[in-house]
Image (cartoon, rainbow, N blue to C red):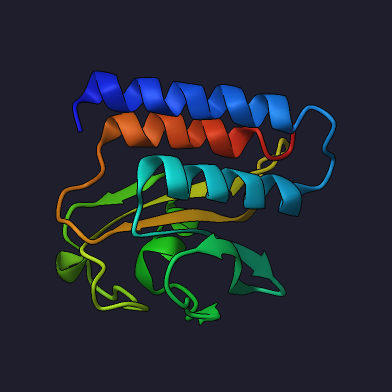
Length: 152
């Protein structure tokens, strides 16, 4: 998808989520709403959140094929995003050391940390594609904007 078209689609999703979450103070409801819109309007292969719970990274709201429940600590793209405290884009998951293959059809991935106002990470937004090189800086910018709506 062209960058301008993709950015326009993301912009509409951000506007819609902002309107839907005005009266919400429940982060899980916010996550579920974001996932539903992203998954269906962007056509992603797998779209979901993993949440830190007692030092474990466990699946939260998601859409797509069955997910891994727990992700082994300090392994894979989700933990890389947490440990680096930044968005991680992986053009080819088979080239990422320690990639966790919950679904062998996944080929590329983007992971955005969910960071509270005080800088504490509570989890990640994890999106997989069944095509290589599916994500770029446009995705990163807009997905970070969406994640920032969760706790506002």
